[in-house]
Length: 596
Image (cartoon, rainbow, N blue to C red; front, side, top):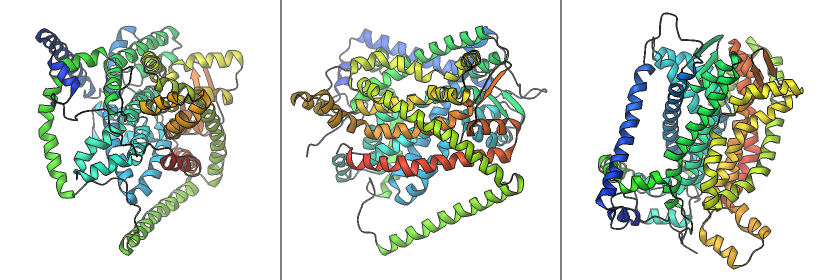
């Protein structure tokens, strides 16, 4: 069996004697390294300066009139609003990454917990952002009384709920599909769990995790309006941001302001791509599993400047004590563990499995009984039946959307991921399309629907697709970019036809990534239904028959019981579809289409 290894030489940043890229940077002229150090230092100072400028406004006290319910649509405020939105986005992304590492590792490594954590992840991704907001806004306000920080925390938490789930799905799948050879090597070297995590687990998951981080930022932009202009319990909390700016401009029917917000949004996305995503995707190439280097390497001017500077040595010097501390703390836990073994269970292990299962089922039964009692007392089961009928309508839209988007984006994503030249050209375009909040265009789409008499029951499918189709595209790109160059060269050596190449290499290689993208796209579509099934512009409001519109109306009016019913029905649909359809496909991907 061929032994694949990561296309990297040493995980330590200061290993210049063994790391060609570091050694090459050491050979740079002194003037070049000094200029790179100055540029990097200026960038870091600028970043911290912007954060220091924003922070006082985030924690300012609430005025005597309470939290504002609207924001200014003065165009001069747009740069500041965009900066506030970007700050919220990346704070939420940081917490999403921490959540992904902890939750994904527990779901992949602990056999008993996985039976609860993976279905729970299905439920969490199905709960719409308004459901989280209606349940948590009061908690955040109590935690930070008299301060705007409470509303800011609620907004960041709402963005977090639109980012974390697809990252956790991707990381969990990467951990459960690690090549057997690398898993055995980690065990043979007797790595601590901390060493294994940073030497094997994270590098193996880096490429799909990075693309899902990009997709998470795109998902956060999509729900920016709902997270910055929070309307729950008959109250509206408005925070300075580009999402609230667009919501206010739409309410005022100010198309010019919306257009300027769109231009600002595109510029922000392009800037983030140049400064962050392009350097990260070029850097992550060293984590591809291959025996030969790619003929066309991804490049980034920003990454080149960073490599020519001393920033990597400074970061290694600063964080090495932390790494050593965690390494020492995890040594008493024993040797590393990978996927749980398929050995015969002992009687004690089987008994613990039974006890754990009984406790989980008892807790679920108790919660279900309490939920049914609340529904019966405050709404009646007729309301629950109506929600299920509306849920079926939304389910049909989600199923059609997932099918059409898969047919369109799987071949396109595979071609982008397998061709570095195309990827370098298409990445910023895809970033703009995915990160651009399509609900910014909803006012224009609403006018088009009204002018052309388009039925919103069909038009809402288009609106949902604008925000969720990218989950499939990004995961397929990540899966295709991980295909080893050796296998691609082998297909050319055997002179396989185009169809044979797709059937025998490309489709099997991206199948698992498509499943992950399909799960998150379907979950995202359910979430997007709350902003796609009811759209408005000025005096025009279009409402589709579906569960998303049901939840949006219940949340805005403060009807807690109807909100709970809608969220519960949506969770039931998502979990049922994942259990009956997506999970068997995921198991087949792990069993048949994993690189081992």
